[in-house]
Amino acid sequence: MNNKNETTLSKISSMTGFGSSEGVLGITSWIWEVKSVNGKGLDIRCRLPQGFEKADAVARLVSGKLFNRGNLSLNLAIQEEKNQNQYKINHSLLNQLVEAATALQSNVEGFEKPRLDGLFAVRGVVELSADFDNSSDNPNLKEKILKSLDAALYSLLQSRIAEGKRISIVLFGQLERINKLCEEAEKIISLQPVNIRKRLNQQIEELLGTFPSLPEERLAQESAILMIKADVREELDRLKAHVESAKILMEKGGVIGRKLDFLCQEFNREVNTLCSKASDISLSKIGLELKVVIEQYREQVQNIE
Image (cartoon, rainbow, N blue to C red):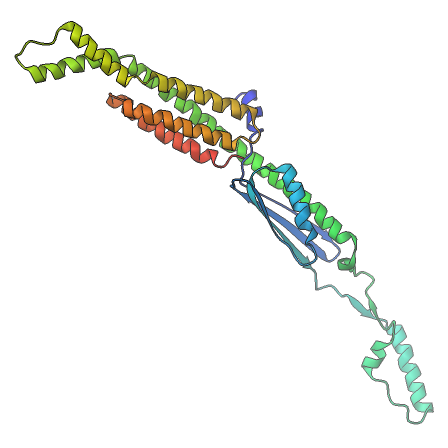
């Protein structure tokens, strides 16, 4: 494939793709997953944990700048690590309290032995572990999670562009196939005058038998009428023109899915007329093969943004 076609392929985007991004802050980890499938317009649906409703508006804003069509599904999953030692006992302070309580119990009549839950309730006995990062209270957490949403959406964009390249290779191949079939049809119709006249002569001989045959002038008139009815050159010319229009659109790139879909309708219109006019089995076979290729082309076009 030449450099021009390589540049062309990068301009076409599919509507199907997948993107993700993930991050960690302290004990909190998260992952964004974004899926995209075909759609008439741009539809965005978000599944978000409580407290992250703001991400819905951010997702719609960024997606509107990156995409024009497709049904997008965004999912945010957040998890906190629960296996860390969040708290520790200040043994030094606890020992001091026990010693003080023991001394008081010995010197003060009626002083009850302190309960363990009471000692633990004393401020400083149970404290937060120095290596524990309580990032769930970190004001930057939501900001970092929302920022990583951009990375997930750009990941989706790259996925759709890559898929668009693969589809474009198939589409260009199908357009070339349509052109070749048109050329084969043109070779067949170039022989039509001779074949029609020959077939008409045979039919007349079968009908008239031993009766005198038609005058040459009348035979030429009937042949001309049949050739006009069976002439598909106009349909072939329009088919090739539509192929060129499709190539120009694909070389231009951008949001071309609907325009290509319209051209598919025009392809089908011309091929249906060609098949109805075909007076030759070989031409009918080409018409049917054109229908198959055009339908395959249309199915691929449905994926283009």
